Image (cartoon, rainbow, N blue to C red; front, side, top):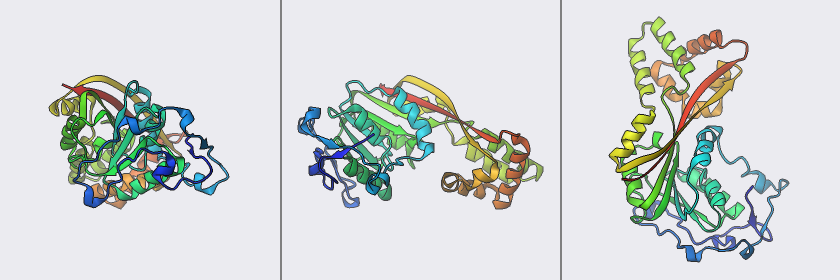
Length: 316
């Protein structure tokens, strides 16, 4: 897929032919980060010959598995529908370890520059490794908070965020900042999972809590489910931040497991979901939910529904 510098490993932005994009540190988080002007970017593929990715090189192999499946579910929807034509200055808000940052940079080509912003230092280090190793000259990263972005007004003509809105501490502040850093005529593209996400799990969870008479647990469960978005609620939040929705696309993904034990032991479930589930009703309740799911799953195993949406909006 991606590639790196001619003649071997690329260790510096200059050797990559990268345009000197921002490399922020925590001390500079509040500073404005200048987006590289297009005049400083390579303008023709012949400018630089890059070596092919070598599947026998452990340094390439270490970066090959570029993203978790969870990010890919919504990210594929985003990449299918995001407006790419005529986009020259792009921000990936909540870029994490580099998706869809690098994918957008490579799909847009040398005529565009894509900046990734995230407060997660460890993830940004991983993203930087990919940029340097694959030598993507039109990608760079900055560390910062979505609700106080270190960029000038009107710095971008496209801002995207893949599942980011679910995880921002100040989502409304982040949307207002998106409005500020977008140029007139710019586009904001967001993907999100929706209410009804993993509904099979939550229905079994509710049955277990109801059977146990755990009203407090049921309230916590309903509150946990309620923070998921709907398309109308996403639209309302965008309008409140000064946007007008121009495109909505929805799809439904399915995550399948052999049984509930496999679900609960999956590394991403343990990282992103299980701690919150245990806070709702405790580990013993999860065991009961697993038994309930296995009872109703059927011979084909356990399937969990994940409804997703992609919305585009422009400044109103």
